[in-house]
Length: 411
Image: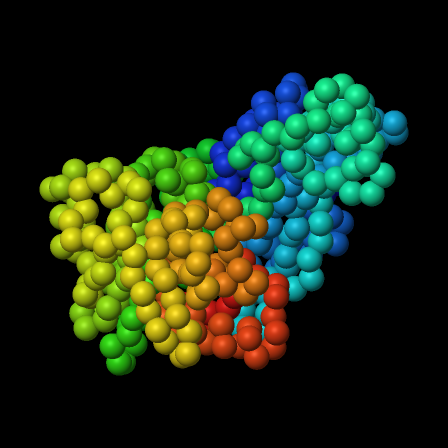
């Protein structure tokens, strides 16, 4: 045991660590704020600390991950000064074996990421970089910008809203014991630093989450599937898109993605692939990857598919009374098009604009990072659209959550 132990548990979102802190760094650089504060863990509220501590010390507990959704950038007041924070929403889930019963309650945690700054200086920075302001703050910022001859806003991609859906897989308990949720046990300090143990944990997590298939999911009748953005062989995709693999372990990533494809898609099925099969792989390597996959495939060219043969720019579908245009980049859809758009390209990096399904914008994001690292049946998409239209749903489906057969759910 160590002294000065915290009174709360700390969740560690291992897969999103690099992405989260890189976004904080870029935010600070764009806003010209020095001394940004990296995120090393998410302190759990008292209720979550009690629940998770009780769960992991109970015999037979099957909690294998803690869902976390991180949003930013939020301005908070401390005295007469202001700083920026991220907000982490944590969701209690029942054991994996009963996930069909739904999710548990959620709680929010504020994570400060910048030191305090002056009121007017903060408002001006938000105004210039097009970060939303409301009420009197918006009027004051606009007026102050005019006085200082800085009225023109500066739209910068690194200041777009942050929305990141991930999972925490390790918990530091109040007495500094490290508990690995996928493995279901406490770790010694040596085990916590071991790459071998971390690899075992990632494998257990992927299987519990449904991100690594261990048996066939193929349908009885021929089906049409859609997917995009595998980025086979691209080791940096692991950290860029928070994929559940060891950093730079593209070999395991390739094996799991190809296995998931073949466990889902049968030889008689049709797959529409919406671009970025590899990351600029040469022709020989691209053909080798292609030869491993089941199904008849329609290849749509992505911006990284430098040697992918027999591609098309787009593909059209008509099903269930709807028209669909399948493209790689949703920005390349003609302005006059009025049907549904199915796309890749954005991965899970712009979920606020391109979630799995947006009912208001009529878009479907089939990037593998959004769809559980498995191709999605067209029938599933049609069912979700039909149900959304029947109920008048406007809230998007952020990600497609998959799990072992019979327990698929949606977040």
